[in-house]
Image (cartoon, rainbow, N blue to C red):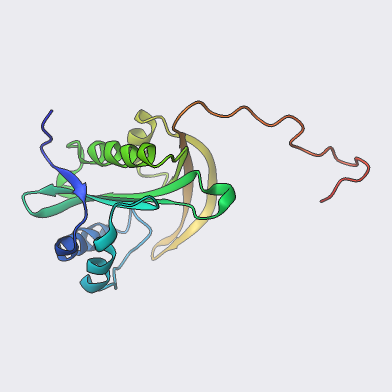
Length: 187
């Protein structure tokens, strides 16, 4: 199947176009945490030199040479959570509901499976119905809510926490909780 919008790892020469997309979505103040982008294209040129390795991937959706979507997925570096990765995604308004988000998620999941990631986590604003529906289609489930977590220019926003297991979900540990008042229990 040929994709209408090719997905590939970011390259240094994509930095300016990526920043245009990032700034455009940030200016909407609704879909991502950032409301104004202050980073220079030089920073992203440097970051995009290593946009696909065992610790992270930064992937772009392109319409011609214009960046119309981006997904960044990063593995946690702590030894006990090294099996977990977090992701952030954006799609420019002109290209929403056209399969860009699905294509980006497909490719991010391919990276995660290739490098042995077992769990992917993300947060999304409750008002972003389209993104929540997309994540659910891919198997993400809601695991919690951070109340008034983001302090935006217009007020506070909750964040919904979602996660996806990339294989059979592990069984809960037996005896994982300490009973209240048990002798020798630590708090």
